Length: 242
Ligand SMILES: [Zn+2]
Image 1 (cartoon, rainbow, N blue to C red):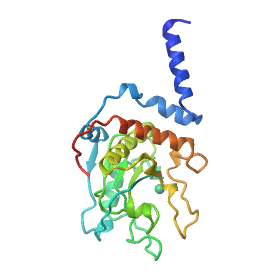
Image 2 (image 1 turned 45 degrees about the horizontal axis):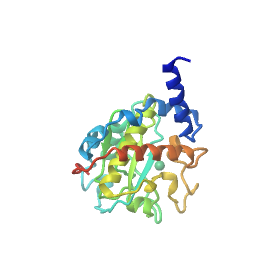
Image 3 (image 1 turned 90 degrees about the vertical axis):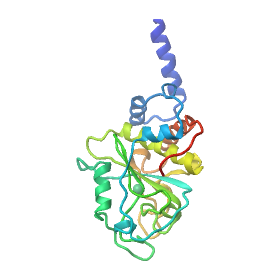
Image 4 (image 1 turned 45 degrees about the vertical axis):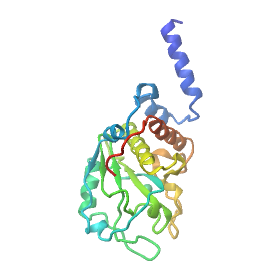
């Protein structure tokens, strides 16, 4: 064995040993993402720029922001849009939210405002921000802690959108929000985490990209590892945006 291929073999063995996940899809995504050693330390402002956030809020007082509902974030909830239509990217969702197109039937114990809303939508190229992070969304569990205390991030799964780039962008955004609000990685949760009282199934199998057999497992832990890795890159500095 030549020296170079020997070094490569050792590196691959190390990667496999440190990775409990045997899901071949996860292995493929991981291989497309930059490795930790290749990523420089970042200030919060630099990480915010890497995420590439386009602020395109639902206008105050309209549609899903008709009523002001303040929030002190304690959790970050991750979703998939489950919208495979070609072109259903982050900015298309921003438009739908602004136009009040994502209606949901209001009912006691169910949707509280007549619309679905959330804070951020990530795709392969950017993140669109729809709500300030200090306002409640309507994306998780009706009047439960998922809506009352969590920042909602949707990952686009439309045709042609690259999952590896979308997941890594989402992980960077989650790391940034952890830093801003002192949220531990254990409080970065899948939508599945929240009980939707009165709905069936009680736990929605979302985000489908990051669940194993409809539940959080090794793939979810791999994602949390990716979030923690980006968080660990942060060197102290002022925060930007919200
Ligand atoms: Zn969801």
